[in-house]
Length: 381
Image 1 (cartoon, rainbow, N blue to C red):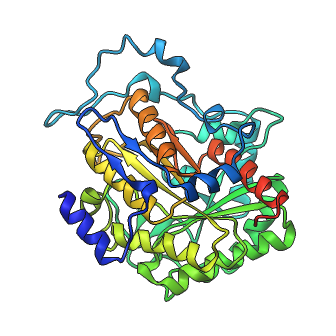
Image 2 (cartoon, rainbow, N blue to C red):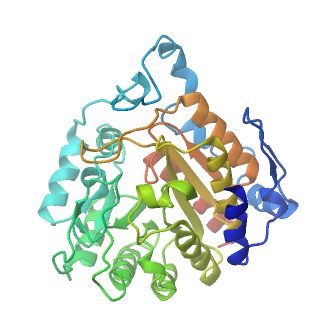
């Protein structure tokens, strides 16, 4: 398995930098040596008195004393459906910001991945308190996807409705009205479109930047069937962060994702975005609890490190409906903390790892905003 992994990497002409070299043992004591170049780059962007992602992340281990008495099963047995452990229980979304944001979305005929994918953080991100900024991830190109991944509850169809030509304008209008300073744009897969919707993405970014150039924009994109011209169109549109999720370890790709997606195709998307605009931050996300092994997680992180990905998030897979994949295991907060340390030691600019962490989550977005503002102030972007 490991040999096949390295073989596929060599076929993609990857070279293994020292920053990704590791020693793997069965008890997960992982030794990673960061290369001087990668360590220096990280130091340039994040100084000692800068923001600490752990300050903003959900699932801090300070609450673990309340969880120690939990005796429920964490690993699924055949035919069993696991009960939700206490660290994954969230409050019902209420509050003025939640209702205001929801109403604005409906008025402008916009969709969010927060709702469509039934994200457990919607109350925290949208509620925010009366005087704080709410965060939402806008889902472009409608609410119907052309793919059928086994983990995702978004509707699917071979031929979704046509694109709304006013959506780029309406999205920019809504974002400015909310007064947000960091925005995440994502979308369903649209394999029915010649460019997969890349031009639609690019128009949305340019509309936002024309209204307020200070707004930071992250695009969480599909893989566009590996069409690198589509990737390039978005990478050069004026965005600040290019995100694309590999979703799971290499060995579970066909089990979890639509057959048209695969690990190497996703890596090429992230690599090409950085190639055409080296100052872009690249970002990806992995779900845990689908049956992956610790060695497979380690190997996947190594592959992402080799590809030059800057930012990494790891979160718990949660079954959206009974029709979707069952949770194989509820990973403990301690294990998530372990993988956060591994990612940081490997040299990722940040690694957000926790049970309720998602690829688009206000904690990470707050951290990235500070990181990007610092780079711009230093003239390194």
